[in-house]
Picture 1 (cartoon, rainbow over the protein chains, first blue to last red):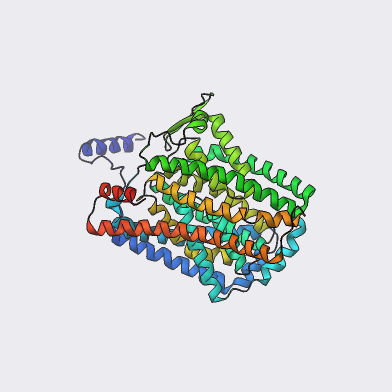
Picture 2 (cartoon, each protein chain N blue to C red; picture 1 turned 90 degrees about the horizontal axis):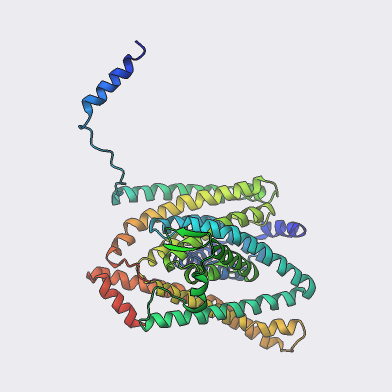
Length: 110
Length: 365
């Protein structure tokens, strides 16, 4: 009884052997539409973050100038979030626009 | 640093950001970001003085710049990594030695400042700056000219650089992304020397990128990408220390991102449509102009310590020339990059293939 489920699994694997295509390890390139949607989402997140920081600037500056560990922790968190959101938005946008347009001009010569 | 903290706190509270100032900071970010993305370095030398010229106190400008550099380097290294331009193994090896080099330089600078005073320290840094970067400019100019003449042997730098690079001191390390094999000791020495020079004159990338190209045998693209990877660590350390001291105005760092996140993408994409020697050309132009900018200030520092005497009007003229050359170097560098990108876009629009484009570029110089 204990081994029954394993046996069942084995039989299922045997049944499907050869029918399941090998797992594709190559990354599917992101479509332009999906890339630009992601850029928009990350851009919106960046705008929300900027709006929060500038509307709560007194609180933010008080924490950062407190000379406690909360200061660098908040500064670094904000910097990482801002560069992450905004940087990813810019990256996605340029990847599907400028980079695509320049594809025929790529070179890697010294 | 401890004694300066109260000043820093007062200064943090003093900065009032106006919409005009915010736009100007974003513009400075665009300039620095584009240079960083294209060269792997070259933001700080222009961003800090530019922010100071807007009325931001020096220590806060440095703090905002280094805090901003942390996130910028992450995004820049990520972008370059997509293009296969980041050798993390080389970056980590260099970082260890670089860290020690910076510590040694800070000790040397502190000792000189204590024995010679502020004016003496300024003179030492400027003289060091001019000597080292003049040598580098001449070396890189020679290399670029040999490219122009068609002497491309894949062993750029030649002479002493090639001899150092080819030293066979075990253990030999293989850097797969950079496609180079070099002695661990040479990599550590380059990191140490780069760190010392960066710690002395404050412009790490201007030394680090050429050192990786000529002494470690990296391609120009990999050197630029790996330098950005290295900048993540120095940026993180700087961001922590300045924030701990209460000097960081994170709003300035965020405003810098408005321009620099676009600039770093443009700069990194720019490296894909130019040849390695064109990256070197932009870097050499900028370094040469920065050398002039520092060089013209030497008489003022000599006057400060009483070696020579110059009038106040001469001193202010020299200061003006220094500022114009400094800001001009960054602006000219970015304009060259944008010009090449514009040319590539036009050619892409006309369907001219890359080979034809390259001939055009070579002939245009």
